Length: 494
Picture 1 (cartoon, one colour):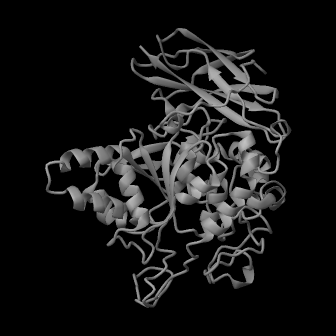
Picture 2 (tube, helix red, strand yellow; picture 1 turned 60 degrees about the vertical axis):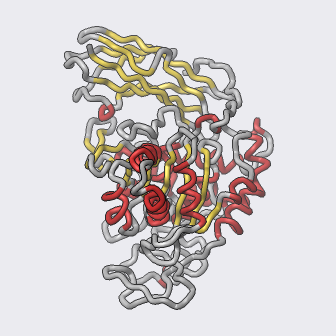
Picture 3 (spheres, rainbow, N blue to C red; picture 1 turned 60 degrees about the horizontal axis):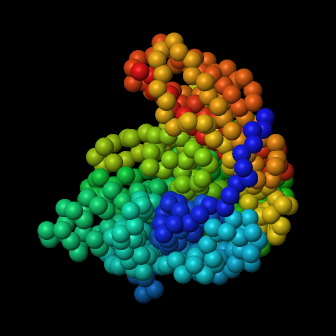
């Protein structure tokens, strides 16, 4: 069903970049980081990228160049090493951003908010890369993060940790070293703790546990590791592990990936299983040659199948889908819905289960439920890189609940909702109303009657005052790659 809104206008910019989420990526540039980076570059119109910083992890570190040997027990190596699986400090600049520069003129025709290649290149920095967990010295990367945390931009600073958290930890340590013991320290610590949000695709070194958590306990840290169930390595570990819901597995197949993602200057850099590509400097990068896989390593399913984008979990919460709310991780969306695990430190983790349309509890459904929509969106944007004419590509619809936000209602009453949808390509948009049961505090299922033409009614049950019911309006267009956007209304029982 289509309800027309005016064609999507190009968003106006303010001095705070249109209030888009402000973020820094830190990465050890493993193969799955590289695949995530290709996707991330296609969404740099949705976020304000302040930095892309090389950092180490327990899987990848460069060494100090002096032959110093390093060892920690329980790692992939069993003897001291001078470096470990380091993939270099030029991949982002020489490959990914060079390809981005080739396709930038086309991307800008689809959204003028895409940052220039020069702007992104100027924000690539080398962080703390010498050893796993190294945070003893200031680096260009840690200095960048430190300065952003201390500046006057009022927006939160979302610090993505695709590798270890050590460069982020060094930035915080530098602030502590500068202000600790001064009169300004309580104020500075409180302000930095309120500004910084760490989005970690798992803890890939010990700097969170040993430094950030005890010294900066008020910083919100989201451990998004459970999102690997959707975006992590897609392979056979001996248990038939296949990513995606049954209906969405086509989007993880080699045929779909090869045809729709690994295309053009930027897409050709994307990593998939057995695609013949490898990361420089990594002797364990066996994704192009399954015969070299170490014993016990996961086995590929088929050529060009989805490999891994394990770090999507760190930026999906920031993407503009209509219901994104990075300031409130308890609300769901493409990044998943998180729950507060501890208050001191302020640690959040992804919800373990959510209910599907049948009412069954499904593990990892908080990220899996969005997989098909996210993959179609990725494919549509990859086509933007090859399409100079705006009219020849698909663009997301706009979806809005009239008077949405939060509404108040009494038990037994009926709330009437009106939804509108528009599409910049004049595609047909199909609307669907559904209850996001886990987002609300009312534990039961409500009755939603869809009257068509964007109208629906919700019968309020015998709920307790103060309980909430979350209703999502979902709109999907009928373009080549169907694109989906959302809006949300919270009904508060009074």
